Length: 147
Image 1 (cartoon, rainbow, N blue to C red):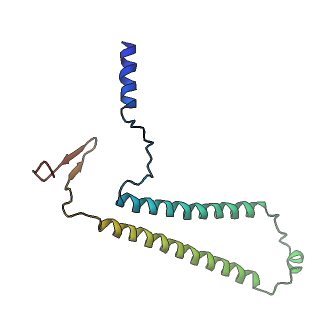
Image 2 (cartoon, rainbow, N blue to C red):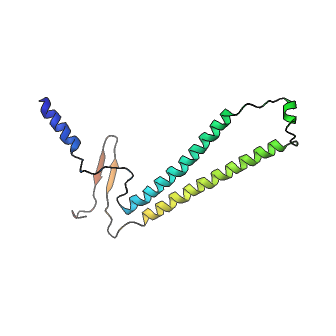
Image 3 (tube, helix red, strand yellow):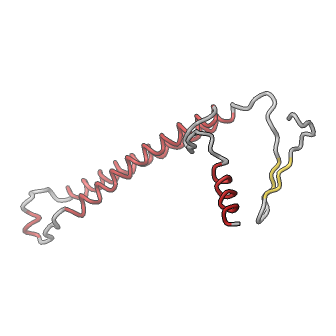
């Protein structure tokens, strides 16, 4: 009995093997190719942003704390308000960069969505899906079995 269960389990496990490695990012059609491009674009851009943020955080944590008394601040010979101007400029640049990156991601996403909407063929397949709590009900409105 145990041997029969092992054979049944291994046959179920091997049933999906066709000698081809399955991959979630292997595009098989024009629509999948557009989504794959968007995925890799987001991954590289947001990965670079993540690395930059982590590098800046580690750099800030590794810096020696500054003295906060007036004598040590006066040795930099900065005019009054120069530090506030520099901080304001840095925050403005970071905010502008964030807005530009988010707009770029939005444009890439919308253009991919538009490209996918134009891929519909002459006779698209219609499927009606109703989601219930524990199961899906799928029906095909077309009575023609070839459709």
